[in-house]
Amino acid sequence: AVMKEELNQFEMAAKELNKDNSNVDKVNELTTLREKLTSRDIELQELRSAFQSEMTNYIGEIASLQSRYDDLDTTLQQNKQGEEEKQQQISKTQFELQVSLQRIGELENSLIEIQSSKQENVDKLHAVSSD
Image 1 (cartoon, rainbow, N blue to C red):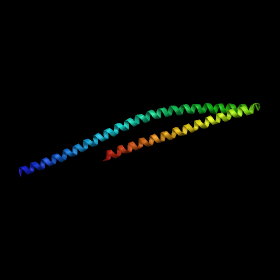
Image 2: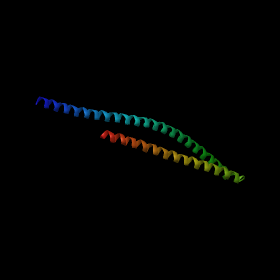
Image 3: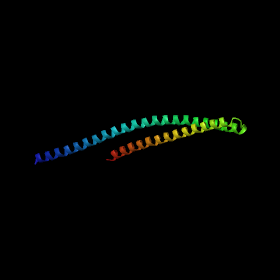
Image 4: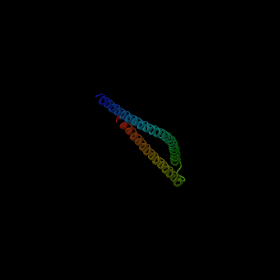
């Protein structure tokens, strides 16, 4: 009877140890996922900073192009001479403005993709945490 009791205690201790090992494995997995998420978050912050800087540059460029466009348009209204040349300059400015706006759209799409990727990683972390 004493041997059976010791065997039962040993089996209970083994089960508890397996449970503890499983918990350690989960903690290690969570730590690894958290490190990956932190790394990805840092990368996203760097990308966001670069994106914001590029957006600021494009906004400045657009403002400059708009100002040039307005100046040319005013000049065109005041003086009809050389109209064809001025029209070409306006077309060029409008084209440059369109290219800049298209690039901003591409950058916005890129940011949306990055944010979606981050959310997927957060969702994975939550899923593992709740297991």
